[in-house]
Image (cartoon, rainbow, N blue to C red; front, top):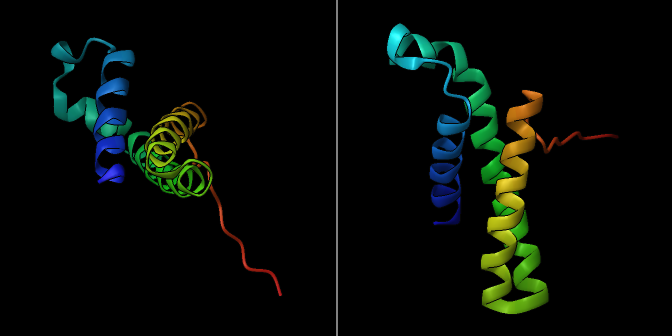
Length: 94
């Protein structure tokens, strides 16, 4: 549930903030141009909300989970969009 809400909010936020005259080019052209960036921001927001929710639940219960999921998810999504990268990375070292 947190992942879906965070992703939906991320899409709405970046659609408003990055409006570079969509009407003249068309939505399909705009989306093709921004698809990778938006996808990485959504993945970052989802992962951030998951880890923020787990950390918040461990420290503050249910309300901590909600606050942690929202704050870390949005911050992670913004970072992912601005840097065109997924904000969390996993590497397995042996």
